[in-house]
Image (cartoon, rainbow, N blue to C red; front, side):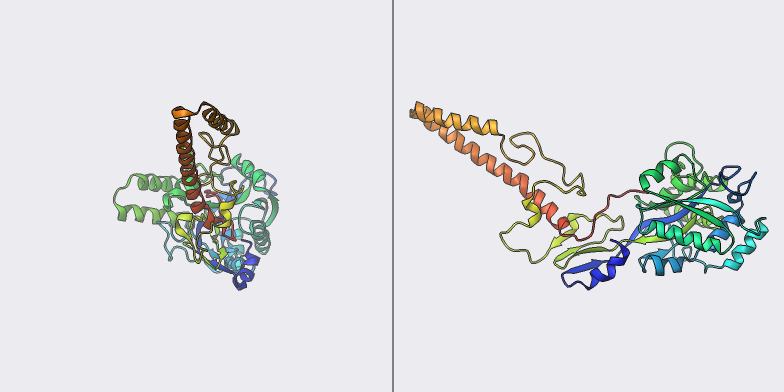
Length: 385
């Protein structure tokens, strides 16, 4: 839901809003591989390779201001790269520092950029909650310390191929944790890119040998306490080196009718098995069951078309088979006698069988679909990015 609509929806008498945190962290990644930033006024070197520059950008971000003014309270300011609810997250690591432009300027001066520098910030404008607005705020905050970030906002369909080709100085991205374990983020975002999942979304091409060792060790460690300590140390080092600039963890409220009860899921994916429609009218199917076609936004798993067998896509008998049965009935009436009676009984039995199959085919689909269709909010398809 758009953040500006949540307060209004909370006041509507026929709706209710269920709040919850999503296991998705929004962050800024930086090119830490190229020897020179394309399009920057700094020639012959890359400012992002200096940890002091990255720390200055991190320290200049007013996350609480973004939470208040842009997200309207629907975010959790982030200091680390995993959200609450993910194994490895801890509140003490996830405490954000107060924005300090003066300290940030000092770090830039120590790194050799007393007057700042220029770079391009690539940002999607239709993927995350208020993504372009967040980027606009960052541009303004970095301008206070002399860093001139040129905002390059674009649709996600254009944005993602661009950054996958490493054609970027810096970029805003979101990362959801499908496994609810910090290794998922560390392996994809922080580990040096090799093969498979190692560094598959390390688009700034971060490379830290010590972190690589910690991440690899956590992959094979069977002692839970030791493994959790490894994950914590890796998250802390990622934050201490400012390899990324975390902005916030998203919150995703769901709006629904008053008579719907459901459990909020941190992967932002409503499930009908956890959903109930209260005070339903006895003997009356929900309106969602009246329509056979699933909406465009419906889950492929729950709304796959049923075809073949006795039924077409709408669950009705094919016209050819219906004509054949009518012909058999007429033929049986002409022939008469015992054969006609047996044929008629067989057709009646077949019709009864078809009726039962159609009911079994239809009712479970309705039970799965109807609560989801009562949601006023939109169910999103889970994705890491």
